[in-house]
Image 1: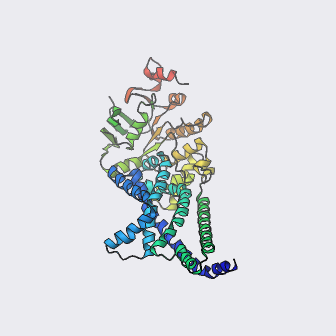
Image 2 (image 1 turned 60 degrees about the horizontal axis):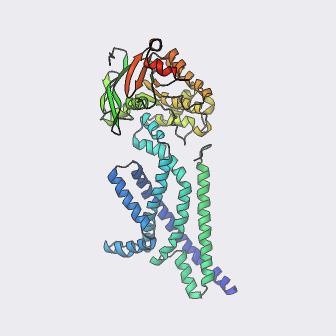
Image 3 (image 1 turned 180 degrees about the vertical axis):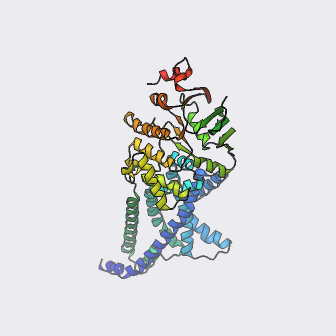
Length: 222
Length: 248
């Protein structure tokens, strides 16, 4: 018991260093996913049939294939094939981002569709172009309405990022695994990793909730 | 229809036709508005009043017909002309369509800033003036969700007026309102009419129509089947009188 505690405490700086990498992967993947998911959602709502079709295939592919398969497919398959020399870290960001984009697009699509159609009509009636209407009227509301779903997506991506350890990324899980297998303190070390993930989940969701409250429109409930 | 344009004609609609979902919603409709006119569209739901109004400011692009504003025919194909027409023709909707994430003053100012490209300060000054005109000086910073229906509709009128429209289209502006709130909106519209604003309004507020409308256009099945002054149309046997006698 005492040995377990000693191992956990002495390896904590090392594992927390991995947590920094985990956070970097998740922030990168969420941001990348945002820039894929938002345009994708706009295409799904406002695009023509061809664009909608392409967007749907993208979404179905990334929602339909397990994240582990995606990681192997891109890192060992595609990136090798096209001779793209990219680190395990960036591969994880890229793959989780591409996949997150598919999920985020569905969050945004739902939000866009929940805004009464008349608002875009009113914007156009004032002389705004479609792009202006979407930019100034629709998107500011979409971001607000999407925050709870986005916070949920964050908590999922954070925990899925643990799988990046199979590529050899130096994040929480791989560093924990490294210490555990060397010290034979599996129970204590994986428990420690679980607690770190739990705290990161809580902190992120709390932060997003604060943003949600700050952006909240008085009197407006969905 | 036998509308003749004259020197005072501000807006002329000729032989407008619109097909939606395989059905002809608007059939060969013509009408004209002189400067300062207030004309009303009356008729059963589904008769095409909303679609006609939305065709006039090109929220729906008509399939056939012409729109002539200030003596100049508007091309339905040129994006620039469509946007310019919409700026000049204000639109008031039945369910207000305020921008939910913006305060009253921002609702009015946003198109001034983004469409008319006014600097922020100028846009807010103008928005304040327009909101004062509809009696909402004390609600500048309220969000739509904090306003009553009547207040919301007055904000939407201020929002349209801020763009300096030459014509205002109103699509049943009071029909989503509680009976007690209807008057505050109607009195704003009445003031506007008295100050010379040209308006085309779909409404079933008959006492309002009788008092200040120049002409009633009765619309049914996508056509204007009767049109005349309220006095004449309601004093003889007409489809309009028949319809109005069934209104509360």
